Length: 549
Image 1 (tube, one colour):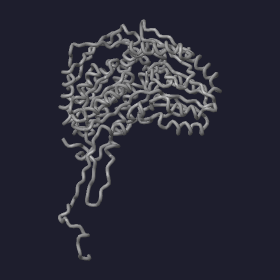
Image 2: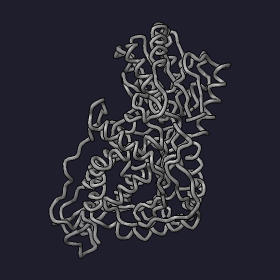
Image 3: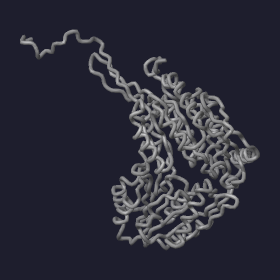
Image 4: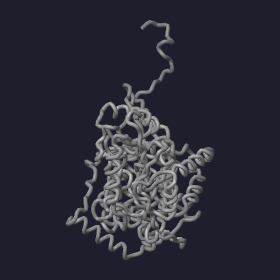
């Protein structure tokens, strides 16, 4: 099958695409009733989660439970784990699907993901939101903006970016026609996805697939439940067998097998910086075995900042710290975890923060009055509990500091005051509801900006709060390398597909901007084609003649 760029009649355009509206689940709303009903129904059942390889359900008998983090005794389902045989089968299925899928007209590929978006917008919305709430302990608001709106936006708007890429064509000299053929990569893509965003988990395999690639998808151990439903949506949307192959299991083992295969062509990754560095090194060491240089796209950690100038609105600042630091238990790579506050604002800011944080309800996300749920698992809980224990001697706990795992993995929203600007409380990623504040003298604003830029290895997100345009300009300039997503008078979280393409550099990843054409273009290998209508028939050039014409 020849690609549709050259064979379809007419210039095909996708339908007008837009960001998905976010429902508010207010009391009395139909969506509130629908999500409550789905939560109740899903909590009463226990599902089986097979591997999906070559379009077939594969059961290995090696089982691992998916549990509610906020009620860890409650098992939502049992997932079958892949061993070496299943991973090799997934690679083989991806290779088998590649010849047909890579050459399908882009309209056919787009139609699959546009249909998936419509299914999620309609009949699947509350099921996937409920799965994300129960399996990852997200509140209904956090689930709605993630597993519904953002994933729909990825699947829809990626089509628009694909068309823009395909439309980028070279000029042609008289008598010639130059064009670019945007080919899929030669081989399979390994997608390794995180627990904290269902949308990211659904986009990392889908983005390469949309561009004609085939994928082996390894979701996070603690997000198997939602991944199962994402795959079911894609299957209902008509995704051909083998285009995306879902395998649960050990990330280390699955990546070892995949990266040893000569057909490995790309890594689409979101997770820890340390694991990404390890994978990057293994890929580099394996370059002699691969058919082509693999594409490596990764979004990793962050130690994201909010810097306040003395002109900042303290109420807006306090709200941004709470939203940015504590929504979804601080388990966002973009979460605000280091705050730099001017001394002139500090007493007022401290009072408001402590008063407001004290009102935050933490508990079962099925209770829609709760602002926070549980952290994802016991490992996360234990790590954060150790951070808080250390803070009792190395910092000042202004509010919070409670940790209780008797029923769920609950960490209270915790605000620390740090006296040493070089403390690792201001440079190390904790990935939980722990935010640290450093108070600086008002006249040291420029010095503080320099410290923000240099004391953490990351470069993901950050904010400046100020009503002074010169202070905003200074911060924007001095922190240009410190954040791939920079916010002015807003929290450093909540990037929207099509509005704030997301990604950072330094130790935060390759900055290939999920939710933009810059990400999608990494999943194609352009071929330039030149056609000459009347080829030369004489090798001689005019300068070679002695005859004056």
